[in-house]
Length: 578
Image 1 (tube, rainbow, N blue to C red):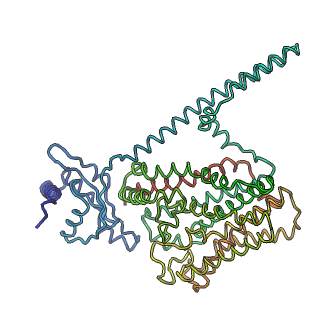
Image 2: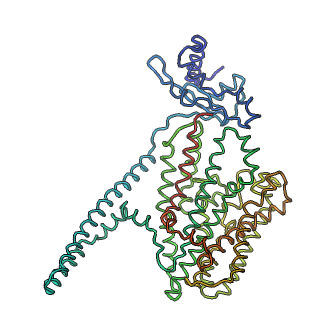
């Protein structure tokens, strides 16, 4: 009846059943394996109260059964249909576990994943070597930096002593000698490369709270940090939904609260970053064009951007594709990590070249490092930015017209896609039709979905560059009205869906209108805040956003963006009890 190849699984299973029937509730490996099973009956009883099918059982108890001299097998935890935990001998595989359960009268689909110890692979060792080299360079660079700084201070102290000498001639001769010695002790190319890895030197730059030059838009630091905190708050919710034990409470209570919309709509914080990206690119590039009278090395323009983003991104991609698998274990940890790593191994080149959000098509958030769609989208918009920047530099009227035209086109594209594919409000998960396959998205991870936000940023950068740091006096009543409009627009965008939370579903045209114009409305409100603060019309808001304490945190937002999903996924996927 059974295939001979299954004997390696069936015999240990039979032995375990025999041991269980013989020893009953005595302390034995069989009891340890049996009690590790998730309680399906209890799960079905609890489901009406929790809406949670998951009965994962005892993960560690199962895996704690080890092979001995008398017994050739240990315990292996298997998860069926992602909801039911079982414990079988480690000589079995997923197919055999599925067969045994089905033959026992328990209907199981083809989704049976058995957790086994996965040895370190070649890529894992490569990642360890690269990380070790970087750590070694940090230690060596820090040591070189400390020694060089100590030597420099010693030389400066000596020069000060020389300056106190009475004889001018001797002072000049010895001072010149000291300066020559200082020059000799200046780090060469190799020294500067090593010091670039110094924890002390980099820490000094990161913790620097100075606002920089007079043309710096200091309020951007506060906007950047607050937006990143908002996004991380949203991710802590989105990433943890599979770990919620009482999902019915979340669905029926939490998601009906007015305050929940502030958590649900954190993706508007992402569009704030598109606004900031467009603003800074245009602002800095226009200043450079004015300085060089329209000449710019466009190859370096693009290469500098790629080189600035890619090393940290590449390192995180390497760690996610290799070492993350060994950072934890659990019923869903290995399975989820391996699925993502498989995508990374297949499409790493598209990821590092910043078009993985569009390839393979149709667009989906189920990609390698699914949060880096933003980087891909931002890079694609950055590639397009010179078209608008050059027009604004050479002919402001034409440039303004083109920025406005493409903003309208972007809004129209989103409206058309939202209508055709039946996109709902974010507070209402029910699509208006079935035109969009499940798991795909033609708006959110795409450049045309965020072009409007980027163009608002480009035009803001153009306006601020024209002002060149000058403060302007705005009528206090007009200023007050603009602040009220900006605050009202932002709040309406984030919290305007409250009726949908209460079950009042709008017509499709309302949902399409919301999908198409809300990003523009929100980033325009944020643009006003930055403009008002930069021109001296921000009042206490400017004092808050320009607070020097935001500066070091602002320097860390890019790495925080890259790292925090890895930390969150690892934490939530390591859950073992349910």
